[in-house]
Length: 404
Ligand SMILES: [Zn+2]
Image 1: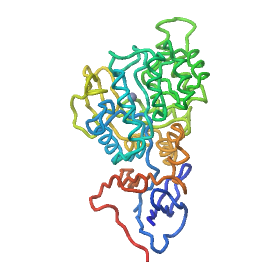
Image 2: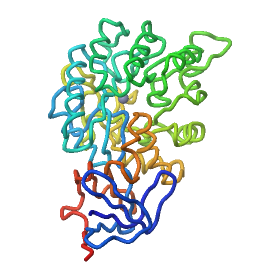
Image 3: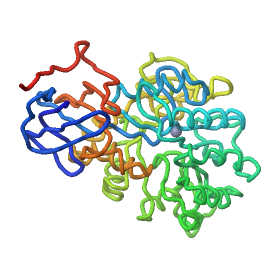
């Protein structure tokens, strides 16, 4: 069997001098132990073995956006994010034409059952097009629309390939959409929304359980005061912090948010209700310059500069250009949270939010061997999906020794 020896990142602690043994696609044993005769041993050499990262919100990488709608784009993105430690992800749609959304759902269904060559596809995060137009941020505006059953029933024909679906709670038709999703087992988020606290309370009653990128593209007291001087009202931000039913996610690239906002989210929601996401666009591992958010056909121009995505005017953010390893290191550095908790926010917590924690998200006997080997500086050395290497930083691979 293949055995990893060294520091193992468990959900609640770092286990030193431990051995994780895998056979085929599964983890067989985890514990303070010695390798067995016949084991092939990978020495972690002062680094760590962590569960592979799970990304709930990711648009692209290596030049591709999932909305490009091709198998080539899906493979390219899944491989690019695997290089950054992500072993499972939700291809995240954005605002586009009806036929473009359907094409991406069709590909999610196909890759859910097949090998991407990199991170596994759990199922779609159906993210656009049901945004509040004024809260759309950098996403293309032309096809922002309200949910109507004639349209979304066609999307929900792919319900088995949709893990989560987002909607702005204040839109006409939002309640019907959430109830239709919940009836088919699709989890629901609120995102790109200027809802009031009262509208958010209603959305929680309909079954919304997660909020897209906390602090970004959402209403708060100050925003809502523009339309009602008094009494002041809370918005999506206050509701996210208030309702224990709601989990949320954060873009910890060090560019979107100052450390105090990461610290606030961590303090109020805690590591079991706060997931790290990349919200990464197609410019991951690409040079600075102009790109598109969304499909090649109809996407919105943005530029990669200063390690972040920006609107060409430079006046607004246009999602991140970094992988999950960067988010992990940045959150750790800016908050001082314990390593085991920050890894959990990039693995078990998002796996639970996506409903796949029975098989993914932590290093435990019986779970799938989706693993990432990190060095002492938490740089990615090797990544395994289903026990098979999908990425090795060292060209010669990790040093192996055989126990006889
Ligand atoms: Zn996004």
